[in-house]
Image 1 (cartoon, rainbow, N blue to C red):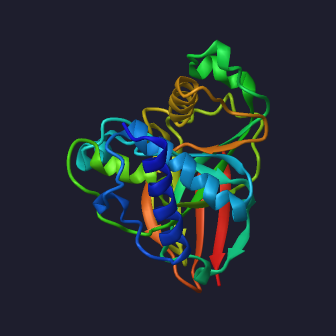
Image 2 (image 1 turned 180 degrees about the horizontal axis):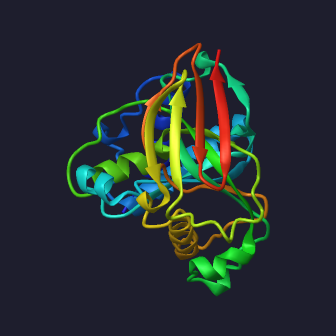
Length: 267
């Protein structure tokens, strides 16, 4: 278990590398977190440092929601990272490619919370969480692929991902869908098109069997850490399509049955 000094040292290293646009190679440093629990503490401290210029957190991303991806990476559970409120946007948007080291996108279901989720009522299920959801939307995750050696050992890829905030650079939400309860989200088909060519497809069941199951996992995981989701927060629940790179001049569109579509252009 890392002490406060080691956690601070790791967070400072990450913040310095982030500012320098260098690979976030924390896992090959002496201050590397040894466990996922330690990695979340490092992530908290890292985000607090970034927040001095980026502002407050506005929600969370969830990663490794696919059984196959976890198997390939040797990861035992999904992972979560924070999203800054200032980086959560409404589609259509144009982003500047030079703001990122290596921009990539994912196609996800986005959730906006309409009320605080009571910590005392955890653990939750999909049914018990539904009343706290304001709307769903198709969502891009913007990912800034910073790289960095993952290290070795059990859950090394997860530990590296958590500590580095899983490279989140924000989210872009499509039109809000408030009447979502009648949509068969598990069966909903999703597509991603870049410059007029379809580059990926998937369906809602690809993320833990149902796109809201990762939300349940997140709320219950946060409860174990003594915190919860608040009204107005946005959660993106895991990609149904593997990440695809974007470059200046590209336009990408994603669509999910029942939730509509969203568009991002890179200048």
